[in-house]
Length: 402
Image (cartoon, rainbow, N blue to C red):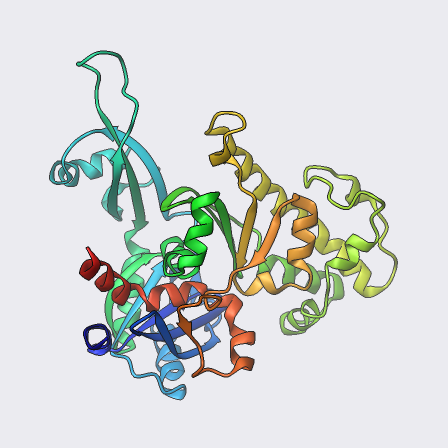
């Protein structure tokens, strides 16, 4: 215990999830058997300070971070943050077998085959996942191959985060990919969740303000990451346009809606495919709430349609009927996943189990220091920040266990 606490608290590391709508902060410490939640907080992101995942006003965001940490009594001198979005590429690629040293020398050339932007304007990293069982060709001359997880992020996106942390008086311990942080929080540090994941692949979707990020994992491997440009802001804009009100009023009205009302109006077909367009023609009545629900239904259905396409693509990578290709559940996180009745509606439309992602639904996580009200309010949006907060201590724990 003394080793973990000393390593982790030396710098006082906070996990910071800097979204376009809110900034989330989490601080934890390792215990002998797991983790203890020390502090959670969030604040609004300064308007127009983050665009397409890039911090364009570092001074404004840094000031917001400083206030957030000060007003909520965080004791931190360092931070871990993350990047995500369409420009951030996380992809499994197949390469000729080579040493890690050789791959490090050639990684930019290999990455150029998979990215449309200049590799000179990107940060590139990789992880060798292992050798492939099959070879190309036959006989001893067949070329041996390996699978590599390739990660590419725009340099301006990463540099802006480092600059923002510096302005906030924090050391940038690491900038990682949101997918990895969310996977760590929901699965990797949770022995029960990892046991379930070993039995069948799962998808998890982070539904934020500007985009929905979808990931599919099996065991310890990422098979697919995708950014879908439909999320909370699009829903709010629809409400605003329909009601001719301010953005804040549209946000408040959106929180009163319940998508389950749409399911009640359907006929006997309770779990129709999201590909069907029958609901588009249904009448949901003439009230203001019903009119807004009908307008939102089109957007939510389009989001679910894109999710289904991604699941179908993943399934196509495996032999027909292969258990590895069958995703039976989707874990949802992010502030916009709290849209009333979203989980039930998505489950009915996709025919899959949809469950909220709760990083604290973990037998090894002690949350006694935080009020139940705060946990209920913040938990759906804290997955990424939790994964960032435990990153360094979890890596240290793994090194000691190796």
